[in-house]
Image (cartoon, rainbow, N blue to C red):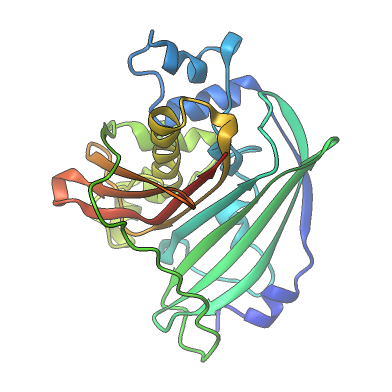
Length: 285
């Protein structure tokens, strides 16, 4: 079996140093669609170095995204075809606001391997700390098609669903045709997002947008519309990638305020609101 769950879970954590600059943060923000309109003061806090604030989801690409999803596929006990891999979900816990420039020690390990029958799901945990202490902890759920069925633990199934009633805010965001090409410069070089032939082999009609790009676009929408543009209010953020987005489509982002934070549902407008992000919540102060 290409995935040896016991070996993957027993593998020693991988630790390495990362660093980033304001240029990396600016590139990430542009990759998730910041800067429209270019002179809007609310957008300049993402695109102008003299007043730069770091959107917390930058943590998923800091240090070029290492170890991330690709790192989760290079641990002992895991040997799979990249074309069978999808990013199934992402959670992030912030210990404090991210600095505009920084250096940190990153530690990554597989913390769970689940058998979903038709697929396996690996959970790759990444923790970052700098000289002042912990910065963030992130879990990436890596969905590997065709690698389940060995009788292992199916794992949790905590579906949040969509709140009753009309959302507090609804926002539509256009995804540029070139957005995946720009976003990948932040470190995710999976050809699924750029190479039409590879995308076809993976079962898609054309290259798809990175799930983490949609993830970042959605968090920015919540911060800008319901959190007063204050990135430091975000405490945690989790989402399940329920479907793909194709560059050129439009995202419909629906937001509900709740006791546990902002609940969010994202769909693709041109495909009758086909689900894109589900089970999504932004916890905040």
